[in-house]
Image (cartoon, rainbow, N blue to C red):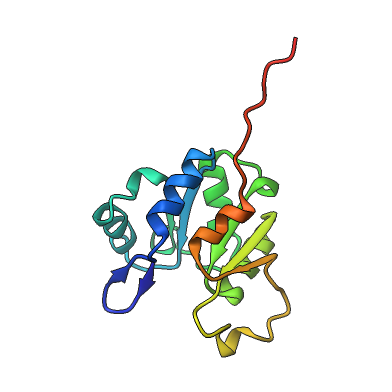
Length: 151
């Protein structure tokens, strides 16, 4: 979602969310929003609330990305090991730096059309992947195969 006067979903967002959930991935939102209402309202308005198991907002946590605490809180709420977590963001300086500080395994940037933001080009830390469409996430997150009981 991008924020200008109001939230506008990316064109391939819903199809990608549906497919990631079907593939067995657990999803959450970590937002630097200082409003406790914006993100939940947007998720509700687009009918996406059920795709996300956890929403971590800076307004509630009083810590903003790139601090590791929002990432730790999301992993804790999902009961997932940090080394099994990935984060998709749009800012290297906040999203990738924060997820790496927290110990996440994978940081992915959704790059805007036209290339990286000028203030993001010379960051000391880089994402493991750069995508231009949300559907490209499916290349990085294959279908998960449940472990079978072995006797």
